Image 1 (cartoon, each protein chain N blue to C red):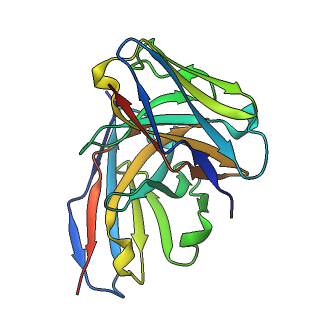
Image 2 (image 1 turned 90 degrees about the horizontal axis):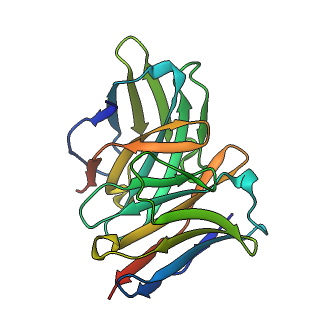
Image 3 (image 1 turned 120 degrees about the vertical axis):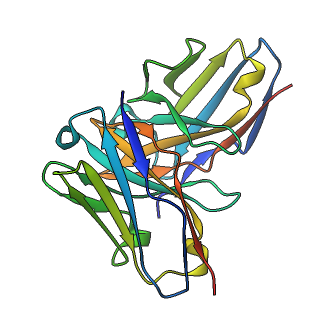
Length: 109
Length: 117
């Protein structure tokens, strides 16, 4: 069973920068896994932030960016705002089947 | 504007089946796929499967193989997900999401399915 791993929790100061990562039990994450990133606030449905590693949705704030970092998919938040406090999930593609990471709870404090 | 609107909450007994609908608008239905995701209370997201709205081809997560069927009705631009042999741990919010070219983008608010005796 493929496992996608994210940091369970991270904390960032307002205005600070934080990087969330997404790793695969099968080895290094590459662009061929087409990483997607989602934000979910309490009581709400998830919203898409990033797809195919680096591409932003039209509604994605400029402070969010996606990349590959050290064999992992990464979501970087530069200039954190209080409203960025949320759960973040990555999604990786394995031969036609998607697998979610366990999620990262991001606190802005 | 792209919209996906799911059917309302359902309560089922263990062993029963449930079928959730997802009516779409604002885009060409057959040019995209529909992904289904669920989230149990207090838990993370779980990918259930995907259907190509143009040709009906499906991919299901191993955990749901044999219990789930995804279909579409192109005449009404609606996708459906049926889950059978329900168990208590199938209690969750089920989401339909538009999916195209590795971009899982627009989500509906979700449908709450409760399995209870």
